Length: 299
Image (cartoon, rainbow, N blue to C red):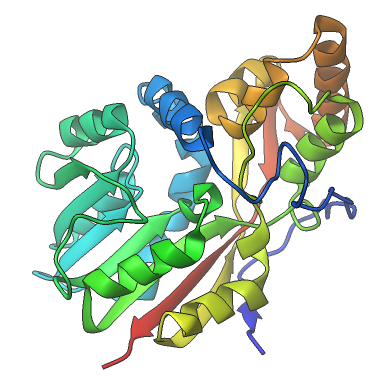
């Protein structure tokens, strides 16, 4: 049985949330068509605001992610779903030869500007245009959350790793563990009209299940599989949180933008009421824990 190693705890544990099953749901479906295109457009639009929004949470996983792959000076490391390059830049700072891959052109542009010592390319994590056994380490910071086929992406990481190389990826914990996602999803699932013409989306928290994550790594022939919790706390402005959130997230914003104004107000009011207890001097300090899953490619 897979084991999770907690490295922190929270003072406001979330209450259990019953989400609809992924099958048959327009929001959390099991097929992908143009969802990837909508997400790519959304992240392209957010490339220049990522630093002040999404990065406030995602960068907190980078130390655990890098520790999990044990990088050494001079090693070749690939950062899959590199976004604006923060994990790649951190790996380069300790002497790695880094290639970053992202599906959003504007993220690649932003990363190349921020971290000119790294190489960044546009590409698909599920079909990497990289040679077999060409990297010593691979990381993926919150990319699995967006894949239609995470198993394929994990196998691609294994393919480009040298034997003995390590791979680590981070993933948000679901609403039953995360106060952030519990609050957001309860409001959306209670009030939103889900039949708003969006393409099906992959189930976001399937790989938050440590047994599923562990099994996928073993199926890709990784050994020494380890799973650690990262106690991320998102700082966000209390007075403009909804504006902040719409820049922070693509997936839920797609639904919110397609609601009637009265429904949108109801959802936003419920979210703000639910998050009020995390207000510390005008800054919301919202727990949204993650896990980091890692393993070693078999020799």
